[in-house]
Amino acid sequence: MADKYTSFAELASSESHGRDYRVQAVERPESPVLIIAPHGGTIEIGTSELAAHIAGTEHGLFTFDGLKPLGRNRDLHITSHCFDHPDGIALVARSLVTVGIHGCRGESQIYVGGLDTELASLLTTALTAAGFPASADGHQYPGRNPLNICNRGARGRGAQLEITNDLRQPPAHTRIAPVVRAAIAEYVATL
Image (cartoon, rainbow, N blue to C red; front, side, top):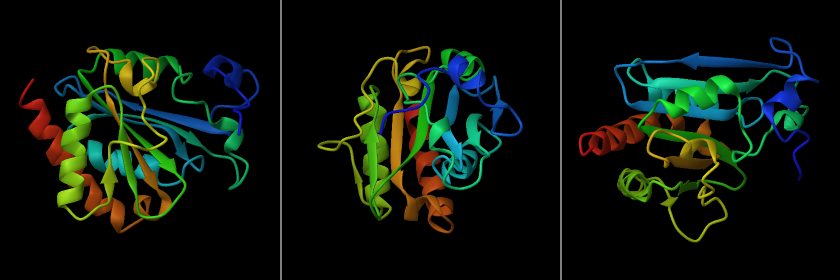
């Protein structure tokens, strides 16, 4: 399904901040990591909550949350390589490591992508070892477009997790978050 809007400026000209959508931007300059959920709220349900659990009080967080009634938020979806909210772009640009949290169809699956193949591999290994079905290859969510919001950071690469609805809900997301956090910490230690 094609997006209604191809940029944030286009969306903002027709939708109202505070009524139709909201933005949460938390910068933590002491951390090189930013966790983003560009399709949060009721656009891809559970992604903002999972992103917040992963970010915790340590890492930066950016969410773009749909606030319309359930079923009417598809209009607020801006494809990741077109997602250009100025606050999101600014936070990502200042981050060494960006991990995007997305929702996808299916059941009990995590698709790992992004141009940071080292981080993607580490995330895949950690999630699989923790008992979550994760795959970094051979899926339809590679996240390799250089303009994808996760790849627009200070190093020109990031990672994304496309997660099915069942794994974005409690209690699964509270089990996924520490696994992702630990993989990120292991990766950051190598930078």
